[in-house]
Image (tube, rainbow, N blue to C red):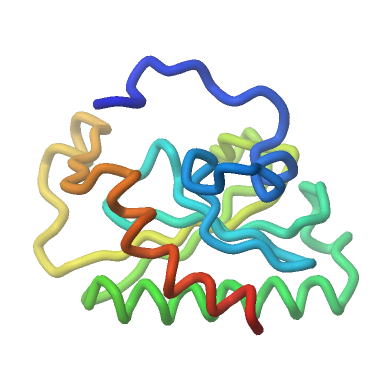
Length: 154
Protein backbone atom coordinates (compact mmCIF):
# COMPACT_ATOMS: atom_id res chain seq x y z
CA UNK A 1 0.00 0.00 0.00
CA UNK A 2 3.00 2.32 0.51
CA UNK A 3 3.49 2.90 -3.21
CA UNK A 4 -0.12 3.20 -4.36
CA UNK A 5 -0.68 6.71 -5.61
CA UNK A 6 3.03 7.57 -5.51
CA UNK A 7 4.30 9.63 -8.45
CA UNK A 8 5.99 7.66 -11.21
CA UNK A 9 9.74 8.05 -11.59
CA UNK A 10 10.84 10.67 -14.13
CA UNK A 11 13.02 9.47 -17.00
CA UNK A 12 13.82 5.89 -17.89
CA UNK A 13 14.03 3.66 -14.81
CA UNK A 14 16.28 1.18 -16.61
CA UNK A 15 18.80 3.95 -17.36
CA UNK A 16 18.69 5.97 -14.13
CA UNK A 17 18.10 3.37 -11.42
CA UNK A 18 21.21 1.16 -11.91
CA UNK A 19 23.41 4.09 -10.81
CA UNK A 20 21.31 4.94 -7.76
CA UNK A 21 23.15 5.38 -4.48
CA UNK A 22 20.29 3.67 -2.65
CA UNK A 23 19.75 0.53 -4.71
CA UNK A 24 17.08 -0.71 -2.32
CA UNK A 25 14.98 2.43 -2.85
CA UNK A 26 15.54 2.08 -6.60
CA UNK A 27 14.64 -1.65 -6.37
CA UNK A 28 17.82 -2.61 -8.28
CA UNK A 29 18.88 -6.18 -7.56
CA UNK A 30 21.83 -6.44 -9.97
CA UNK A 31 23.55 -4.31 -12.60
CA UNK A 32 26.13 -5.65 -15.01
CA UNK A 33 27.77 -3.84 -17.91
CA UNK A 34 25.02 -5.10 -20.25
CA UNK A 35 21.95 -5.72 -18.07
CA UNK A 36 19.96 -4.67 -15.04
CA UNK A 37 17.60 -6.73 -12.89
CA UNK A 38 15.16 -4.93 -10.64
CA UNK A 39 11.90 -5.44 -8.85
CA UNK A 40 8.77 -4.18 -10.55
CA UNK A 41 7.33 -1.33 -8.46
CA UNK A 42 3.85 -2.29 -9.75
CA UNK A 43 4.07 -6.11 -9.69
CA UNK A 44 1.65 -8.63 -11.15
CA UNK A 45 2.64 -11.08 -8.42
CA UNK A 46 5.15 -11.63 -5.64
CA UNK A 47 8.70 -11.81 -6.95
CA UNK A 48 7.96 -9.92 -10.19
CA UNK A 49 11.39 -8.99 -11.56
CA UNK A 50 12.29 -6.95 -14.63
CA UNK A 51 15.44 -7.66 -16.68
CA UNK A 52 16.53 -5.03 -19.21
CA UNK A 53 19.56 -4.19 -21.32
CA UNK A 54 21.68 -1.28 -20.13
CA UNK A 55 21.50 0.12 -23.66
CA UNK A 56 18.45 2.35 -24.03
CA UNK A 57 16.55 0.78 -26.89
CA UNK A 58 13.07 -0.47 -27.69
CA UNK A 59 14.40 -2.51 -30.62
CA UNK A 60 15.52 -6.01 -29.66
CA UNK A 61 17.20 -6.51 -33.03
CA UNK A 62 19.31 -3.38 -32.44
CA UNK A 63 21.22 -4.97 -29.56
CA UNK A 64 24.74 -6.06 -30.54
CA UNK A 65 25.26 -9.82 -30.30
CA UNK A 66 27.53 -9.59 -27.24
CA UNK A 67 25.04 -7.38 -25.37
CA UNK A 68 22.18 -9.72 -26.27
CA UNK A 69 24.16 -12.75 -25.10
CA UNK A 70 25.02 -11.06 -21.79
CA UNK A 71 21.41 -9.99 -21.35
CA UNK A 72 20.25 -13.55 -21.98
CA UNK A 73 22.66 -14.83 -19.34
CA UNK A 74 21.25 -12.32 -16.85
CA UNK A 75 17.74 -13.47 -17.72
CA UNK A 76 18.73 -17.11 -17.28
CA UNK A 77 20.42 -16.39 -13.95
CA UNK A 78 17.43 -14.40 -12.70
CA UNK A 79 15.08 -17.29 -13.52
CA UNK A 80 17.30 -19.71 -11.59
CA UNK A 81 17.45 -17.37 -8.58
CA UNK A 82 13.69 -16.86 -8.48
CA UNK A 83 13.07 -20.60 -8.80
CA UNK A 84 15.50 -21.27 -5.96
CA UNK A 85 14.20 -18.56 -3.62
CA UNK A 86 10.48 -18.98 -4.23
CA UNK A 87 10.29 -22.71 -5.03
CA UNK A 88 7.63 -21.75 -7.57
CA UNK A 89 5.82 -24.28 -9.73
CA UNK A 90 6.35 -22.26 -12.89
CA UNK A 91 7.21 -18.84 -14.19
CA UNK A 92 5.83 -16.40 -16.72
CA UNK A 93 8.50 -14.75 -18.88
CA UNK A 94 7.29 -12.06 -21.19
CA UNK A 95 8.22 -8.97 -23.12
CA UNK A 96 5.82 -6.31 -24.38
CA UNK A 97 7.48 -4.50 -27.25
CA UNK A 98 5.86 -1.10 -27.76
CA UNK A 99 2.94 0.74 -26.19
CA UNK A 100 0.46 -1.08 -28.44
CA UNK A 101 1.66 -4.36 -26.93
CA UNK A 102 1.15 -3.06 -23.39
CA UNK A 103 4.68 -1.94 -22.52
CA UNK A 104 4.63 0.36 -19.50
CA UNK A 105 8.11 1.60 -20.44
CA UNK A 106 7.77 1.49 -24.21
CA UNK A 107 11.10 3.06 -25.13
CA UNK A 108 13.30 0.57 -23.24
CA UNK A 109 12.72 -3.13 -23.85
CA UNK A 110 12.58 -5.42 -20.82
CA UNK A 111 11.50 -8.87 -19.75
CA UNK A 112 8.98 -9.56 -17.02
CA UNK A 113 9.68 -12.59 -14.80
CA UNK A 114 6.74 -13.58 -12.63
CA UNK A 115 6.95 -16.65 -10.36
CA UNK A 116 3.77 -18.76 -10.45
CA UNK A 117 2.26 -21.47 -8.27
CA UNK A 118 -0.45 -24.01 -8.97
CA UNK A 119 -3.73 -22.44 -7.91
CA UNK A 120 -2.41 -18.87 -7.61
CA UNK A 121 -4.80 -17.43 -10.20
CA UNK A 122 -8.40 -16.84 -9.35
CA UNK A 123 -11.12 -14.50 -10.50
CA UNK A 124 -9.52 -11.38 -8.94
CA UNK A 125 -6.65 -10.81 -11.40
CA UNK A 126 -8.69 -12.06 -14.34
CA UNK A 127 -11.87 -10.05 -13.77
CA UNK A 128 -10.77 -7.15 -11.58
CA UNK A 129 -7.27 -6.61 -13.00
CA UNK A 130 -5.82 -6.52 -9.49
CA UNK A 131 -2.82 -8.16 -7.89
CA UNK A 132 -2.51 -9.67 -4.42
CA UNK A 133 1.05 -9.12 -3.23
CA UNK A 134 1.77 -10.79 0.13
CA UNK A 135 5.23 -9.27 0.67
CA UNK A 136 6.32 -5.63 0.89
CA UNK A 137 8.77 -4.62 -1.85
CA UNK A 138 11.47 -3.64 0.67
CA UNK A 139 11.26 -7.03 2.39
CA UNK A 140 11.32 -8.75 -0.99
CA UNK A 141 14.38 -6.73 -2.05
CA UNK A 142 16.14 -7.78 1.19
CA UNK A 143 15.38 -11.43 0.42
CA UNK A 144 16.61 -11.26 -3.18
CA UNK A 145 19.57 -8.84 -2.97
CA UNK A 146 22.17 -11.40 -1.89
CA UNK A 147 21.29 -14.10 -4.44
CA UNK A 148 21.17 -11.49 -7.22
CA UNK A 149 24.59 -10.13 -6.21
CA UNK A 150 26.01 -13.31 -7.75
CA UNK A 151 24.88 -12.04 -11.19
CA UNK A 152 27.12 -9.00 -10.80
CA UNK A 153 30.06 -11.11 -9.68
CA UNK A 154 29.82 -13.14 -12.88
